[in-house]
Amino acid sequence: MSARPKRIHRRRSSNVLPVILSLIVIGLLAAALAWVWQGLSMIRQEPEPFYPSWEEAAPSGEEPQTEQETVEEQPDDSVPEADPEKTASEENPEEPETETDGAKEQPDPAEETKEPSEEGEETEDDYDPLVPASTRVNSSYFDDAMFVGDSVTEGVEAYDVMPNATVIAYTGLHLTNVMTRKVIPGANGDLTILEAMRQYTPKKIYLMIGSNTLAYVDVDDTAAYYETFLDAIIEQHPGAIIYVESLPPIHESIMALNYPKAEMTNQKIDRFNAKLFALATKKHLHYVNVAEVLKDDTGGLSEEATTDGLHFKSDYYIKWMDYLKTHTVTEE
Image (cartoon, rainbow, N blue to C red):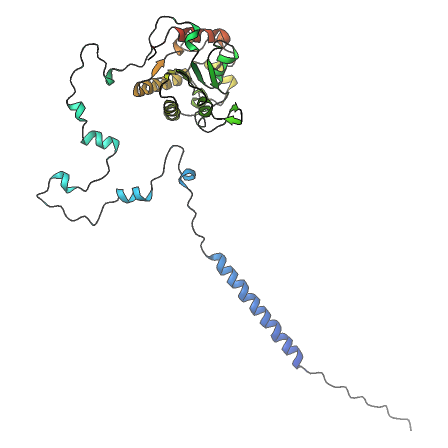
C-alpha cells in the first residue's frame, strides 16, 4: 500500500488585528478632522477693522472730524426742557461758534462804531494791493531781493538778468508738494524751498509760482495751495516786503502741442491771477501785475516770445525785470 500523504493543519489567522488597526485609523482621521474644523472656525472669525490715521484717510488739507467734535455736534438728550421765562440765548446750550456764525450773531463792535475815515486815511477796506507805476530804481534795489518760483523763475538766474538777487526755484515745482519736496541742493543734502529760504534774510521776496499746478488742477484748489505756501513764507520772513507776482500768459496753441495733457488757457490764468489779487488784498501784501507787460494784443504770449508756449525767451525776461524796476513800493 502506498503511504497516505501527511495532512498538514494550518492555523487560521485571527481577525482581531485588522479590526484594531481600523479603529486606530478611524481615530486618527477623526482627530485630524476635528483639528481642521477648529482651524476653519478661527479663519471665519471677523478680523478687527483697521482705522487708518487721519493723514492717510483725509484728503490733503482736510482734517477729519474727531470723535470729540462729533459728540459736540450731536443734540444733547440730557438737556432739560427750556424754561418759558428764559431768554432765547439761555434756552439754547452754548455751542462753539464758527467763524461764520460768530460774524453773523456777534458783530464786531468796532464795525458798529466805525466812523468814516478822514481824508487821506486808509482803512482796511480801502487797501489796494496793486503796485502802481513808480520812479525807476536801479539794479541795486534787488541786492537784498529773493525770487521764488518754478522753471519760469529759474530763468532769472539762467539768463543772468538779475545776478545780484537770490533765486530759489526749481523746474517742475508744484504747489501740491512745494512744502515737502526736497529739490534745492544744500551742504548736507537736498532742501525744500522753505528750508532753502530760511538760510537767507531777504528784505524783498518776489513770488511767482503756480503754472505747473494750474495746468492740471482747478483755479480754486490751486489758489488754496498757493495760500498755504504764502502763509508759510509770511511766517518765516515777517519783516520782508512780499511781492505777489501775477502768472505770465501763455501761447495756447503752441503749449497744447508741447503739453497735450495740460488744461491751460489764458482765461484760466486770468481767473487765477484774480485770486492772487484777492489774497494780496486779504494779507496786505503787494500785487505786481507782471502779466500786463508780457501780453500781446490777444491777451496771450506772442508766438515769437516762446518756443514751447509756456516759457519765454531772454528778451521777455528783460521786459519782466524792467517792469519790476518801475513798480516798487517804499521800503519800510
